[in-house]
Image (cartoon, rainbow, N blue to C red; front, side):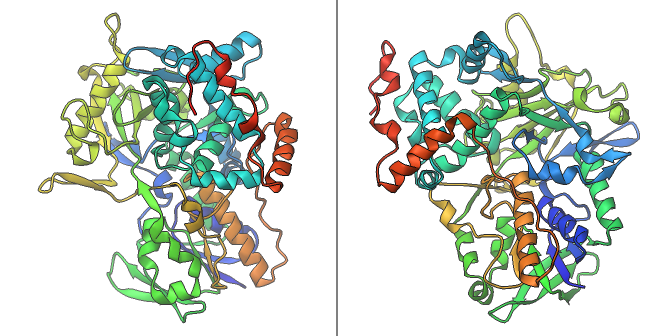
Length: 550
């Protein structure tokens, strides 16, 4: 039987093990922590009553365009069904600036008036002038009508440049320039590629406007409880050997292929070498980079580019409330928050089987993601990375109060807080007055596509299954890690001569009405011509008072 060593037990590693085990391969996973799930895992927070409250790296987010990870979830048995049954559809998005707040339905609009309202809400409401909304829409139409080869060129252009944000109003810059990129995927629009942001932006929009696709889902309980633990149980039943406390110290190679991996057991501190027919490296980019030696680089030259890839921080903090504050039936986006905050109120989505967390002392959980750790806050005039955990707690709460509380309504107040918990991946050094994140997030900067390797390396028995791998998903997410794992498994099937069925790999979709325009752009591209939209009248100039942008 062909043996495979999977290095790392996050979403990429678990996904690779899943696909391999179902196809008859002998699989062992080596995970450094004592629990599986990587950034997606839950962990014990403060104690209420007799049990710890659940905490997470950040809230889970399953947009409607996720194909691979939800397919895998549908094949994990759980309580007479599957883990996919634990996904709950959201129905609203809560938008807030320092001056106003508004709710947007995630249901696909049906009437013209509903379409207008959805566009108005999504593109900044009264904060963005109409002519600038029109220009932004023209930019999106430009992307929708671009051929696949044109999309490759967008890797060399920042989102900020593509949407001409530096020539627009403050509202445009805040909501359309920075809003979605920084708040949802921690990408600074000045350095993030249009290829990545544009593709994801269009997918999110399609989820909101296409009635055949849901906008997004969340889980009906803590991630480890309703997804990771059932997954680990299923993999164990399939015969996967699950090793925790196993840190990969060295990937040994003869300069042509991997000959073994050196593992340190955390409990004993001793090291040992494991061998297999194939090795799947499912480690985050910063961990994999440390393992690349000259010999390994010679065997797998595509790993040379890892040092050129950048990461940022996107970490969570949970507030445990004495009284539940739902806010919205979905996610909240806070455009004027210096730390790029997004929230979700968990209790409304959690099934009755998880209601035991709410014992009368704790009645709600507000989960917040912090996506900007570099901009000074409003209380201490310091970026989040220079704040102590208590300062982070106070600062996040103050930024939320500024967005939610009004003269007529107090939504948040200090007396609501029972306790709080900051992601333990954030380690604060009091002497230096700064933090470090042990679990940063890959960001797709301008020109970075060339440095991202394929799942199958030149080393015949080394495969990659992590979110930095080249995928159709193209952004650091659970979906990208799962897709990368499928690509790695397909490479093993091909290289081993197995007759197993390859994993299905899907692609991002674009609305069918734009297919003809994309074909036209293909002809223009082959003729070395610019996108046809660049030689048509500038749509935004038709609006009264439109600005000269180019």
